[in-house]
Image (cartoon, rainbow over the protein chains, first blue to last red):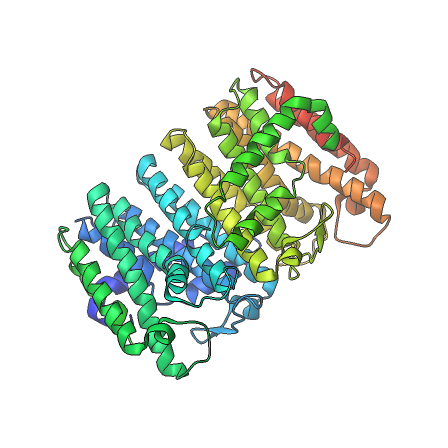
Length: 285
Length: 285
């Protein structure tokens, strides 16, 4: 997606800056001051901002400009993604001390602060949607979409499977279910939220949902191929490469991207979604 | 509030059962199965259900029956309260091994599960509101009210102050700010959500807000008096009893309850809110 940033050029950069500004502003009234800084810390760590870009691209696919509602939807999705990383990094979960070259929140602050920062970011995602200028119907549809994707039916359920609450993940079906939840649900929701923000009705929303599901899974397959190059072996958690081999994993990812593109090709302005889909599997990190 | 349960009798019992049934049903589609059980575990631990009862009583004060919208609002508030207990009990926070005589979630399961259960319960609070049968405007107003009270502007901010992110809590102003966030904001939101569910407009909502703020603080003052009896001394965290003495704390709690009652007395059916307010400070545990 660093390549994508270049290829998508000023569009991605401008979108990312607007979303980042909105995210920082949401914590101006965070209190106490040290907690405000802690809430902003993982947001400022940056990242590819793939999910916000998918929100913006999905809205554009429907001919909608990058307005306040679209930006709020993008910010809300990124808040959910960021909170999940903060909690994932905790010692009881993945126990990661660094993210993107900076100490993780529980290292820079402490564990209690990291738990609370995650809680604050997740809660704020729903406040952001509530505060956006769309109609109550649209905001409510976005809230439902985000809550279902982020909670036990989606991302958190996938994380629960990932920490072993579903037993060993030994076959492809179990691994697919895990990743559909853990990474797929929020990526799909990002695309759907862009559609909802643009006022889409059922038919284009279904196209966006199909695109999001395919891209979400392709993203994970590509990740597994990248990780398998680094790890070179049988160590580590279950992966698609271990179950299917690197070549078949890569082929499946490519097929999914073509499926994704076919789903949204009939929309009015699909070009940016098409580019994002291709870069999902072409990125080198 | 155990006394309140008796005094409020069948009304409280019936309300509690309906909310509990709704809460259990929300996790029927939680996955994997062991995670479903973990999500339901802290809900089944029970508790006074003070916040749901405040939602029901506030709706009744406006002449609204205990309908599906009111029950959904009550369930949403209880989910936020329950998630906050699960995260509060974690080793990095209060490190409590028991709650209401049962092992806490991270003891019964493990820390990773407890973090994810809290995340799932918080997320589901917003899904519950999104799914209730009220108008989109009403659901959106409830969502905004809950998100602002639960997040960094309210409960999570108060918890951040409580874990020391605002420095030592040495004076009454700091302690008041801490508790207005940590316990007051969600209690106030419970009362306001009952009003919103009943379709209240600005004037009665303001009365309910004043009642909720006063009752929330009185609840904490009464708690401090109860705890000071048990601890008998200067140990433990800062408290109103330490700063003001037990007698002044109790007097202030009583004055707040009279303020609360005066605020909602002009509403159509305030009796249940009046009873709940009195029991807030008369409870023995």
